[in-house]
Length: 564
Image (cartoon, rainbow, N blue to C red; front, side, top):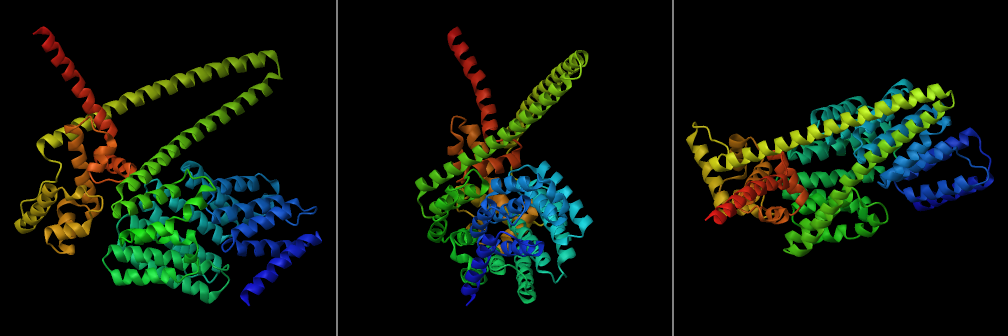
């Protein structure tokens, strides 16, 4: 019965397209109809929009078509197209007479800019969207903008501000009865849970997950949400609950959440199943990871694969193959992921270069316009511009040279500090003298880990520390927190990078990949991230400093042999 209603609805839209004349009320109804279909079937919305655009008498304005396309591609996570069509919508003068659509276009653009790492652009666009939303009393748009600003803050490393924006969304919209507002609050819970999980705050993430489920029940009860929306939101939430419960050792609770996830309609398609990957990896269901992620490769290959989503897909496969003992396959996927990471950096630099080229082109155009005034004015402008450009370039070159010199000095200082710490054997924290029992337990546990070299196993985790030490899980967490101020995960990472630093000192001729693999890392990018976070320089920079120290010594030895 429901499927027949959807078919009739779709045929009704197609019939309206052939008539070619609509009132403003019919246009608004059509726009709302297409919006309601975006979550469930964005491809059909794009197809309908294509037909509207080529019809003799389009029933929607150009900015409305572009805005709906941007919304559909946002659902498909094709952010380059989100950005393109949001900009096309904003380029239309007509959108200024429709404040809500204007705010929505700005919000979509800000989200796409954030995805591509243009944080300054995202913040500027979000500020415009926020002001417009508040002026027009558009609470849903205001909450979406706050969410974009929260995600941007998290990616910039300002977690306190990110949580502040999230809590503001929950407080402003949590008591609403409107489906759109509650949908934005649900999305805010999702972002909050993801960041709590990344910080190993699994219990907090679990509690927030159950709060989100209650909110989704309210959305269902109130009605008004697009078809498939609450099912999708439940799937996201069950996936996060399963991951958090598994990390807390609540396996029955995690398994139940996994089964609830699989019971959702959204889990029936490959993109939906991808959201349970974290739980599958944590529960070591390696074959299921590969089964669920395999269909995603041809889907993602259709679009742009130079993005973090594709890196995450490759990394998940690398970890699954490593768990199955297939290290050759794991290494292959790790290399592909690292390659895309490098491409992302290149893309960012290219984008900056294009931006500078655009600015230069605009300046040149302005100069051409100025030349039409008079020869004297043109000569003055050319002279001033040339001097300004020359001075600007000289300043830039001086700043770059100074920054390069300072960076080299910082690398040398950091390298010397690592050497000093290694030589003095002070990389591990000094224990306080009081509470001898806890101190001796921690030292014994740490010595067992270092002597057995267990942390160099990529799958080594908190549970393995518990097994090796013979202590309870809570005791292990308590000791590590008390004597290092770290979580078990951070502590394991610290042992690995300390081991890597010693290997680089002892074997500066080894490759970075060999050092990373010997120290327990599957992903080169992860190794770089942890090493840089703890020591302030990359492994390659530290190895370079070691090679420079060795080279003069070798030359001196050669001179001594020549003299003798």
